[in-house]
Amino acid sequence: MAGKRRPLRKNFYSKKRRAIYAQGDEIDHLVLFEKFNWTCGICDGNINRRYRFPHLWAATVDHIVPISKGGTHTWDNVRPAHAKCNFERGNLFGEDEFRIAI
Image (tube, rainbow, N blue to C red; front, side, top):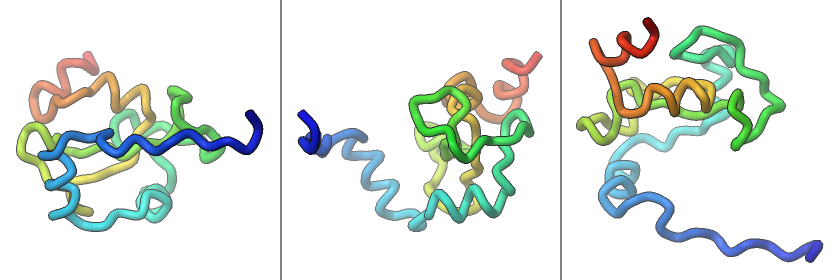
């Protein structure tokens, strides 16, 4: 099966989420990671540039105020995070976010 590509999943995100992304800023992930010096915004640990998703320590884009809680897809609401940190945090923010760290 070498050379055969998998078809793209058109509806990876919900219609509502795609609309929110379309209204937000066009965020280049590599520029974001460089801006934050490849540091996780949740645990402050270094992010290894060589890891790719689905590796747990790969870089992902974290929304500070989650989209599901009314957050936007803009530069002031995103930060880099390890996949593991981002998944554990889920859609928590504010006081709830700090409870998972304790």
